[in-house]
Image 1 (cartoon, rainbow, N blue to C red):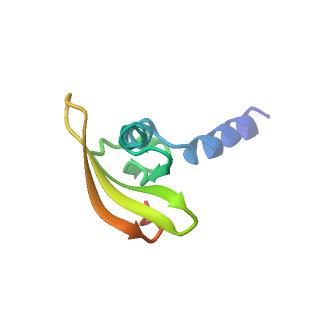
Image 2 (image 1 turned 135 degrees about the vertical axis):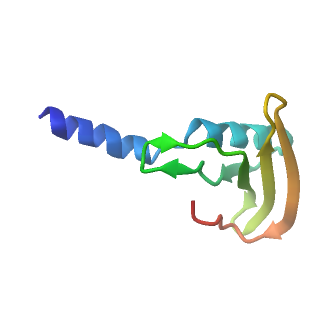
Image 3 (image 1 turned 30 degrees about the vertical axis):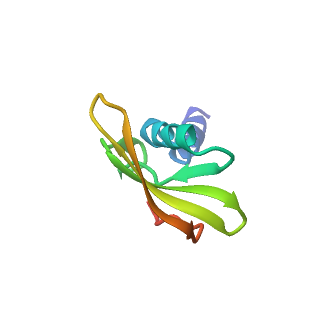
Length: 96
């Protein structure tokens, strides 16, 4: 019983956004309004060990097929640098 409960926790945790990804998304949300924001995941070893990741590719979705593509770069102790890469981009992030 304990093994199956632990397995469920591991599976659920592996699909959740990590802290670094969430922070990048929050930084972009602070810059763009009225858009659904999503970013690539942080690098990982296996399913649970998140590696230090500084660059995220993000989308700000304004409509069904209307997205702006951003690069969000974490600077140590100084927040994030957000750069618009493309307006009107397709709404697909690269696999991460």
